[in-house]
Amino acid sequence: MMDRNDPQPLTAVPDPEIPAGFPSGSAIRRIDWGAQRAFDLLLVPVSEGQEAEGSSLSVLAREWATTGSGGSQVAAGCPGSVLIPLYGNHVVWSPERGAVIAEAGRLDTLAAALTEFAQCERRLRDLEQRGDSLNNRVETDAASILVAGEATDQPPRGGVQGSQLESISIRAELSKIAPLVHAPVLHPPTAASQLAERLRDRTRLAERHDLATNRADFAVQVYEACGQRAFDAKIARRQSGLEWAILVILLGQMALMLVEILSSRTGQ
Amino acid sequence: MRAQASHRQPSIDLLRAIAITLMVVVHFVENLSGQMGQTAGAPLASTPLWMLPSGFAAPIFTFLSGTSYRIWVVAQVRAGKDADSIHKESLRRGLFLFGLGFVFNVFVWLPEDLFNWDVLTLIGTGILVLTLFRHAPDGVLLMAALLMAILAKPMQDAAGYQEYWTNGYFDPDLTLTEVTLGWLVTGYFPLFPWLAYPLAGYALGPTLFGPAGKAKPWLGFTTGLGLLFFGTIMLIAGNGTGLAAWTMFPPTPAYITCTMGCVLVGGSCAQAALARWPWLWEWIGGWIEPLSRHSLSIYLLHHLAHIWPLWAYGAWNGPEITSYWQLAMSPSASFGLSCCFMVGVTLLFRWVDRKHLPSMETLMRWICE
Image (cartoon, one colour):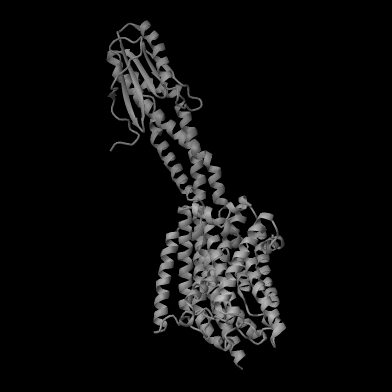
């Protein structure tokens, strides 16, 4: 079964607009990530031994990638774009665009490695953003739980339950991508594995993952405590309702007895 | 004044204005012309039809006292007032109304009727009880209201209700036992079953009159219809000639069920109608709102306006001060007078609002807050 975060297969952009300066044979492939988001991958084949040409093309490719990712938020410590020279080939990555300038024989291998990394980075970036949003709510949610039932008669806000589920969801997603982020170095190394390792290193993927995991753990702990407290409050309210009901019935019985006693005294 | 008006609930104002108008009419006609249609002594069948709605005045009034108290409490909590202050103010309000009930009895109904347990003492007691029970779940309050309504009949039987009403009005001996019984069961507005209305008003207030999205007027409407249906069956089953089971003194189970149903249906309809057609309130709100805002003042004033002249006339002409009670004029004349009073009082309190003059409500706030 396909994970909801798995990218759709590479598809050709309907009307590919190859930036000026790239040789003929270049192509743009689009990876559809859903929710109207995509990753454009520029594939530029170069002849063997044309390293100088590849180097100048890589500057163009980086400009193109950077321009296309202007609106994307990048995590702290992560550069907006990365250029990695690898055995005469050049790979460019930015949050929404990537480029591979390589000999035709290595183009697909490097493109696959870049795609896999881009997917992993995007998932981590999404989780970081969801974690930021959740952490902004932690204090308010905790306060609403702690105050409910003490200063007011209102039950805790229902939104806290949603936040608790969100924290668990974020933590679970982080666990899922952990093997990709912390993948061990292959031996003997391949071009693709080296590219992935360098990209992970340059974008500080492991550190970002650790930080996001710590924050998610904190949120999970807080919301677990909040959930327990909300549950306790619910039980207490139910118990209190039962006590009130017993009190009302007793008062009714006492009133009835009082009336009967008073009536008998009046009749004497 | 407009800023204050915007915080009020138009549907509650409308219902309260209807209640106070009905109350003025029924008191004028009863006290000046002796139309005792809602008492056990005179079944409904012998009452003029135009007196029929008068039985709804007190239920609406007392129900809304609970609702208004709920709205007031919520406003205090939202304003950040601590629980102690809310308790103290609530107790002061309850005691103020309870005490005002006695002062009113002495000055209007003369000292011998001090313990007739009128509606003001009931509302005062209701606020005191709600102050103690305001943290109770709504379901428990509704259960308490139901219990009070159910226990009323056996209590009336145990206390010998009719023995206190042989002359058509509440007439106890001034002993602690009978006074206490009057407060609990046999008076004009005893706790059993009349306290059911403020309790239900408090518990159902948010359902009927809550903010859009939280209120469920349809629930109030369907529950009210159900109560009206059962109340009608009880009325029919109670007496073959029909409607003899409809008495306010004592409040019969059929009367309680029907009036409660009517309050729920009326409240939900008013809420839904004024929410759907707000321009209606733009038209009539200016005339209705003063009646609701100053309902306590109007309640006191209308008694002074027709009872004091009646006593004065009796003292001047009759053998006794109360000689002309219920004998002063024809029902149509007293009905006409009540209409004139309502027109006058509406104009008066519009003027009072415009000039920011004090009223009984201002005095209550000044003492209690």
